[in-house]
Image 1 (cartoon, helix red, strand yellow):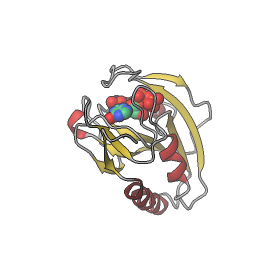
Image 2 (tube, helix red, strand yellow; image 1 turned 90 degrees about the horizontal axis):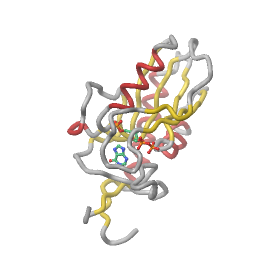
Image 3 (cartoon, protein in one colour; image 1 turned 120 degrees about the vertical axis):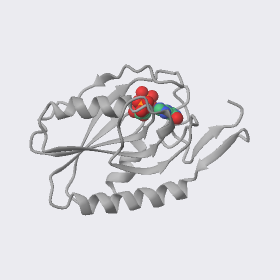
Length: 174
Ligand SMILES: O=P(O)(O)OC[C@H]1O[C@H](OP(=O)(O)OP(=O)(O)O)[C@H](O)[C@@H]1O
Ligand code: HPA
């Protein structure tokens, strides 16, 4: 990574937190029928790490949502680019995403999936940025609360790049 970047959360801190979240979810869902719905693209790395720390029989499905494009601000409009086609009525849904920022994506998707009558719907994100909230929503599980910084790495993009960086970082000159 170049010297104009500052690590906000290191890969070691992320790994410890993901392990902790996996243990909590394992305990909370041990008598349930867990279906993880991962919101692409941002959540692909977090989901891959998290589900391997959940010690249960778990089904994993994906949806693709988009609301930022290449901007740093939510458009406020959440698009379902690829939908989930499975019947979810018998499942306890855990929506997994990298971040709740304005809250538009998570709020929209929770309501969207609730209409399909699953047993329950909860949310799990690695990052919560409460200062930027535009709608009322609190993630049921979160890893870290972060200040109002546009961050990248660990699945999060800047201009559609940097998702592959292992740490979560900010550009100091932007
Ligand atoms: O709380 P919000 O303000 O809605 O922001 C959170 C959403 O924004 C990002 O997705 P984006 O729309 O950028 O698409 P991506 O997953 O392809 O990065 C991120 O992955 C979340 O899904
Ligand atoms: O801070 C962020 N970084 C990258 N993608 C995002 N999507 C919402 N917030 C962010």
